[in-house]
Length: 265
Picture 1 (cartoon, rainbow, N blue to C red):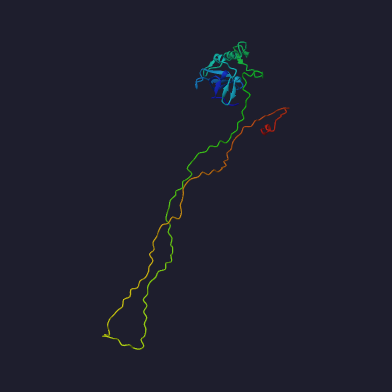
Picture 2 (spheres, one colour):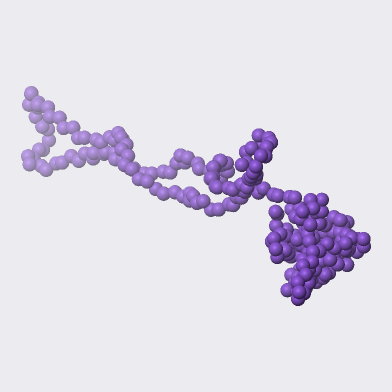
């Protein structure tokens, strides 16, 4: 059954009386007979022992719908390590069943003493006071996905210079000296005083063009830097468990089940 320990306990009218601290089982069959309801949040001294059959166990707490405030206040207050005796059990049952209720017991008489054993009436299917609630939870595991943001990396944007060799064709001009010689056929005489051997020279300046190569920067591209969010689907695999219902039959028993029920064993 669903473990109710630690859950809040409520009585008739929704009043909260504490939390379920523990459970008591009988010493012969090991069946749960009482829930220990603690009022102090830790110390079970002063707790009440309430029969398990009065409990309606839900996921958010344990509800004793038929237990009134007066009945609860009249129950025996348990002390840690004490023996919950036959007399205490009988007194509490009378409170729960009313003044006309009769505590049931069996007696075994020996020559030395009389031993009282409490009768929880397991054979009486109509008496549910000490029988565990007929509630069995089948649990299954489901994947719970959580996401967290983390720094996956970074991108640095910068510049560097790459160099290359370029050739440029430039047309340049230069001057050349042209010397032409022409023979004189008729032999004209030279007038005036002429002295042979005169070192007369003619100077001709020659000009030329040369290329001056310079560099100038031009904008060839602009880069904008930003971010965008990309959504992608990832598939993760994990193993989960599921509780299924086992129905074991013996003897001449017919089991009728729907197809959904047959998915269990």
